[in-house]
Length: 255
Image (cartoon, rainbow, N blue to C red):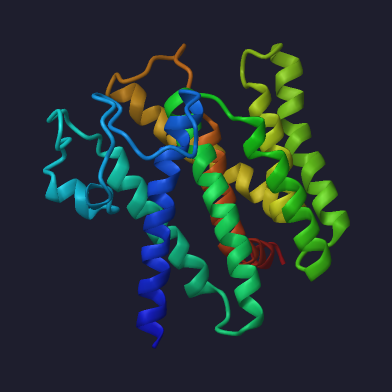
């Protein structure tokens, strides 16, 4: 039965990954969310059997059935990523009925953070609509369920948002954008103040590593902009699932 449950969760994640691809494309191009999926090249409607997550990409050999234009690898990769990310809460949370509510909450967080990651990666922009509704919902859920103290979330929001606000003011908006400030607040609400600090550390380490690699392979130069929101999303997810263990391990070293 566990295998059936995990398979169902994985398939659910694939479906949400497919929806995420469509959502990012339609919001950026100001298209209706209620229309049927269409090829971005020929604008022909995509049949349901050509829109099955991951499978259709390989069955069609990465080409549109109508115009034969190539389909980006973004689509199956995002779908697979959401499938795997949806599995993680099912694996790390206790196998109890009470954990289902928390798992649903983490799925919502995963989906919105994945949206922020993909939109920022493609267009170097973090939309307000992806920040504030989730921040309010997570704040209410954490407060009512007792997962985080209100004080910890408020301090976390101040640390996350204040850290980037200071950089924004010092650099006059040259180092970071306003979206990073808002994302910092969201991180604090999701994680609390201790794990927010950890998430920021993880994000900057990964950002430095990737930045150095891009410089070495000459994909970027010192003046190039890097979508830092993508690294903040990675740091947030890692801290959300394993932050307490990492913080506990680090504090143990200091004793």
